Length: 450
Image 1 (cartoon, rainbow, N blue to C red):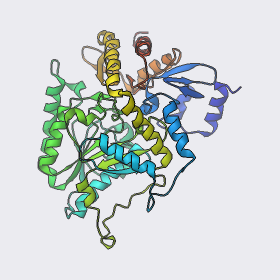
Image 2: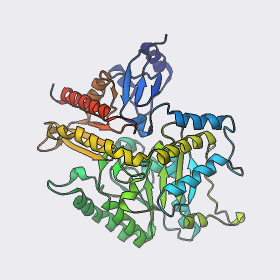
Image 3: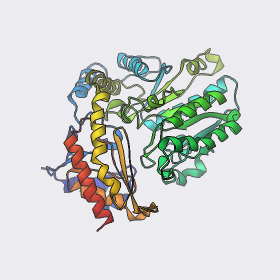
Image 4: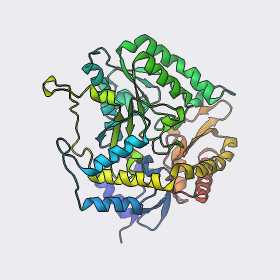
């Protein structure tokens, strides 16, 4: 039988891992995965691990979910793929109909791509192109938030704000306006999330007031800046931003790629602010972790600006070979079936409450500076000094010590720097949440006290 060691040896000869310094594998363990079922991943040596990070935040209903499996199996014998320039097929139509029905009102048109970065590229291009089509050719700039992340293509890197991903490629990127994040980690002692998020909006308003004539759109990750360290803020910021975008005639692009499909406690994070964006980008949970698919939803008004005679050359000529792939659409339809039939959002409330209780002891840990949670996303941030909130230097790799310990205790807890976080599949049990909390406690003690 194949062993972990054999898989690792083969891997290191040919494969270049994403988001990884490959030399790390000389020090930190690689996890070979043979199979998955429910919350569990299984390696080649017979060990198992709770997938506490949903395999990069995509898995909603567990690995090898039979209902999604069946949707894909039914589709694969009918049609695997067809070009969508000039053709159509039933799965992409049904999925579009259902996405229009479940997303915030007014988002009536759906455009597909293969991944989250591509979805955000599409939203940026559509916004720019819309203003061009209606004669406002000076609206070419974008506004983003500090510490934001929208993907790793050049357009999305430009509107991102995490130097770790962006700095190297800065000479290649377009200039943007950057407003300070409403990230509540930096609020004053005693200041509420709502108060701080309102206060942080001042600079965004200044930028829009001064530059709105040249601004096409504002990009935002609603409620949680995931890749920026699971930093969180109050919905009031989104409410204020929607009002300001309307006032200044600027598009609002909501990047719900990581936070959509129930992650924040509602189906979409924008719901908690009572807003509808002009563009909503979706991916990750859209297929519950099965197949690469993303979608951009937008309004009839924006769609109509591209609906024109051919010779006017106003069409949106953006394409991907696998746009609207039927197998991907089938997986997404299976995902929506489960949301519709199983009352997922309501059932998750118990898990959200249990996770909050399980993390209560971390508030008193001498090297935990912050414990934060929005829905099914929770983060524990390690600091050198709890009183001054002095961070550990990134080179100390505290999160990796937690990761390494977790693998010995049946858990996959891939860190974000010195932050340990939970974003598990929704099929996790309260007892499994308790286990993850215990493993994280042990790992943080090893990383900070030993």
